[in-house]
Length: 413
Image 1 (cartoon, rainbow, N blue to C red):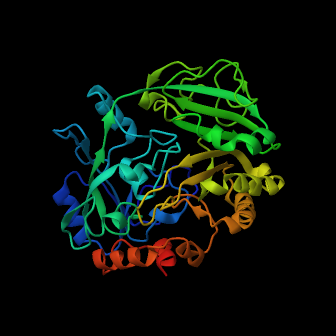
Image 2: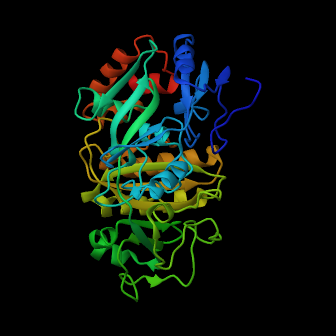
Image 3: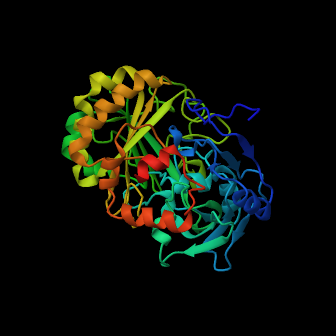
């Protein structure tokens, strides 16, 4: 490739021979059947080699944008290259909404869904749970459609790019709604121990942020539809101004706080579409554990805080509802998510990741597919009851290994 292509963080330089940008589905089908090995590149918001290939890369960003609202106003069909930040404007103008959004709206819809990326909320499934139908081009070039309830559907949605190129998705939508966002400072470990379930259930979406400089939670972000009562939140103080999730950073790129009501798409993400999300220069890891072991998981992180704090920018703690998607990190398990934003230094971060995984080992943690982890593939496979079924689905859809890469080969065994 003449151009050096990297992921969003710049820690991965793709080994691809060529980057294709098809402008139509027939052109895409021809590329698939005429290419020995390829992977699809979404917005590049992954931090490992899940999207890498020694063959060719395909970007769907040049496909025609598609936003087709169903006649019953319960679904929307979108193209495989659209980003959430572009989709939400169309939905909001039509008086509709998605059930949830990730921390940043900059990511592609298809890329987020194929890795089970999520927002927060005890009753909110990850973003993939909104999928009612998935359209993809298989290795033989055929365009196939799988709908919720059909055989193989639950294995295809969180597909890691292994089944084909996702060209369109039909998503569930709901009537538009408003959210208020409140931030509180300095939540104590004692408050966590006594009230953690109530804290996590205090809003439509709740996130705890800490840099583990101590055992105190730096910030609690509560997003809810009705106003909060004035005063402290389980002992945490109302913030005296806007906050950035990373303690100490300016809040210019954060979504509006202080309980000001606003549309769902302007409050559910932590970061505004028009700004660089998070810190930009970073690596990320995330692990999902069963929610009924939430306090154990938080304490497991606290036990290694002296090992992780020197390379940690922030740890976000949040909840995700269970689902039935085979390779979802939340498969049949209401989950607590432990998200880590590290400094942009792979050599320094990997020992901290290994120490963290060792501390979480007894909790059967499932790593986020698109983040940095050191867990061995056999252990990961053992934590997904339907993994063997997924492997068979991959063989059926891609018998020649067109969409395989070294990362998938290791995972699939």
